[in-house]
Length: 84
Length: 396
Image 1: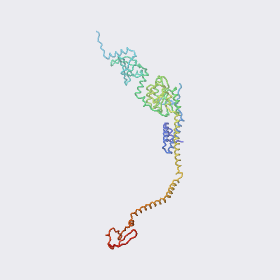
Image 2: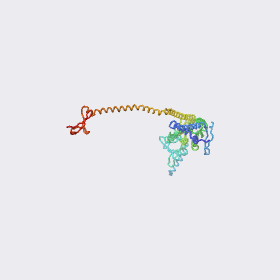
Image 3: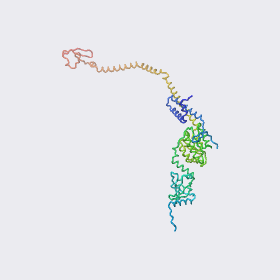
Image 4: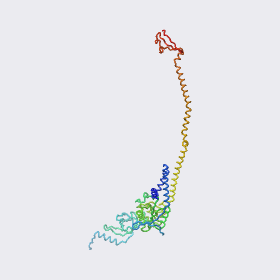
């Protein structure tokens, strides 16, 4: 299944941009100057954004790596703090 | 008689020079710095003076490492120096190999001087401070690869904002070469991993000497040049290090830096839920409002029973029709009254009324006679009386 283009784009947007978009959308909705059809469309978009953002919070796994320079190039290795 | 021995100026200067070099061991000399100037060559020329006298002195570039602070006019110093002369001018001169400030420690003075210099360059200005990204995905850490600091940072970051990529650039944080390593790591993030969104630079607590690397110029420069926003965290609550002053944000400890660098997941989740609720509530209110308006409009009597629209009118027609005959009769009566009134007035001015009092109207061939000359003898004239008419002959 391929996702609709808009949905895929929303996934790759920075978190703060999507959150700001959601906040703006709620403001528009609250202003109440949209037609019912427009309001419903906004609501639908808002719910999808909100789900996407929540999902991003939930399925997140932290990755810790150690950076160093080896032979003038960046080297990345998994990092675990050494015990003293 | 002794022969006169003639020397050239150069010979004298050379002899004096040799004599001085041979006669004086290295000395510790106390004095105040004045006329101090460092040339592009890196050599520094100055005078050392007390209340009564002064001496020229030079600190060659090669010996400058022996002086941890910057020689400045007015500083009271203790210098280690050779006494020699500058031959071309035959001037007495000191060549410095070390110097210490007299009034405070060399490190402390060096720190004050560095702070003053960076401050003058504007590196501590509030306007330079940049905001941190609100929801970073990649956080860089420059600290020791061992110890509590890095563990605390990783723990706090992962707990608050899971899904983060944490990049640790392990460095020595104290001792010789630590400042250079810290500076190199900050630059390394900027050049080799520029997608890093915020940098935490610091170490756990320690003595002022342990933290010294964060007071050194290379670290300050690297932080100032960093395109990635920086948070300093040199575990020391009270004194601010130079790194603290240059960084975009200063945290008192590594854990505190981690807290400042990322939002808290629970708070963001709450905010999302709040926005979702607000949206749903707004839409619910909107629908309820529309439904209310619809119900009100639909319940209007005219929509309920459209006959009402003409019932009213039909009734009005009936009412008017009923009033019409009566109105017509009254109109006729009013006309009759007016007629009678007018007839009465006519009657009052009628000539017939005059005849009634015994007057008569004479006429000849239809013309009323008002003068005797209008008729001749023998004419037959009509005489109108109040009642009836006579035909009379004019006798005279």
